[in-house]
Image (cartoon, rainbow, N blue to C red; front, side, top):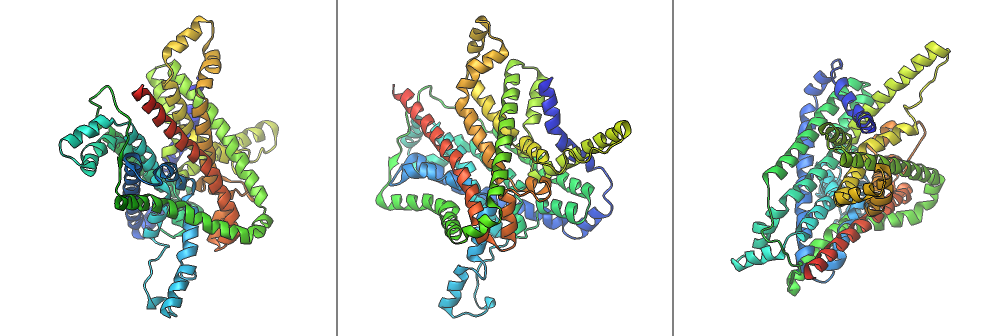
Length: 542
C-alpha cells in the first residue's frame, strides 16, 4: 500500500499537467502558431541534435583513448574528464559570455591588435546564439557519455579485441568494427540522458535568448498568464521526452551483443608513439580545460576581487538555503528510493513493478513541466483544505504548500527519486536472494533483514546516490525559480539573477560554491570505476 501511495503522489504532478492541457487556453495557440511555434520546434530539435552529436563525439573518443591507450597523463585524465560534470551549464554560459561578448577581454584584444573601432569591422562568432548554447551544454554534458562509454569499454574482453587484430584490424578499425558496436547500447543511454538534460535546461537558453519549449513555457505561464497554454506546451515537450525514452529502449532492444568467451583478460592497452601521445593528450586536455579549468580560473579571479560584494548580498543566507534544501531532499529521496527498491525485491507482482517505474519517471521529465504540475496540484490541495476549514471552522487556512519550501522540496524529490531508486535497485540486485533466506531462517523479518543485512552492503551505493541527488538539487534552477517562496533565494537563483543583470563578478563566489559541491561525487564516481576495474583485473589474473 505504501508503494502504491508513493507512486501515485510522485506521478500526480505529471498527470496534472496532462489533464490541465485539455483546459481552454484562449487564443494562445493561435498566437503561437502564427508567431514562434515553428521556431520553437526547430530550435529545440537543433539544440538536442547538436548537443547529442557533440557529447557523443567527445565522450566516446576520450573514453576510448583513456581506456585503450597509454600516454603521459592518461591516469589523470581518467578522472579529470569527469570534472566538467560538476559545472552547471548556465554557470559556464555566464563565464564564456563575459569572456567573449563585445565588451569582453577577447574582443577587446582583437580590437586593439587590429585597430578596429566598430563591431562591423571584424567578424567574431556571437556567443549568445544557438551555436553558443550547443557549445556550452556540450562542454558540461559530455561526461554522461564518457562515463557510460568508459564503463562499457572496461567491461569488454581484451581477447575479443585481440581476435579482431588477428584478422588484420588495427586499433582504430577494431574500435569501429568491434568495440563501438559492443558499447553502442551504453552510449545510446548516455546520449539519451544528455538530450533529457538539454530539454531540462532553462538558465543557458534563457540567458542566451534562445527560444526553446522551456523558455516558452515560462513566457506563456508568467507573462501571458495562461497556465493551460503552458501546460499544453509542456505536454508537447513531454512528447519529446517520451519519444527519447522509447528510442533509447528500442535501441537497447535492437542492439544485442554478447561476449563469446567465458574468460577475459584485463585491458592493458597499447603504448602510443610520441606524436600520437601528444595528440591524445591534447584531445583529452581540451574538454577539461574548456569545461572546467578556464571557467574555474575566471570565477576564482572574480571571487578574489568581488567576494565582499557577494558576502554583502546575503551569500551565507543563500548558501544555507541551498544546503538545507538539498540535504533535506536528499535524505527523503534516499529513504523513498530504498523503500521502493526493497518493495520491488520482496514482491514481484506486475502492478508493483509498474508503480515503482512510474515513481522513478521524474528524472526524465524536464523541471519546467514538473514545476507546473506541482504548483497546480499543491494549489488544488491548498484550495481544498481552505474550503474545508472555512466551512467547518470558520477560518481560512491560507497557503500551506504552495509558495513554500515544502513545494521546492517535493519538486526535488519527484525529479531525483529515480537516482536513489536506481542506485538501491542495482545494489540489491547484486545481493544473492539466499542471504534473505538465511536471514529468515534466523528469525529476521523483512525490516530486520533490510536493516541488518542489506543496508550495510548498500552503504557505498546509497552514499553515492545521496551525493548525486544533493548536488543536482544544488544546481537545479527551473523548478526552484518557479516554486520558491517570495524573497527566498538559493545559490542557483542568486547566480542566475545576478548574471542576467550583467553582474557575474559579484556572483562568482556563489557560482564557485555550486561547482565545488559538485566535485565530490565526481571524484567518488571516478574512484568507483577505478576500483571496479581493479577488482575485475584481480579476479581475471587470479
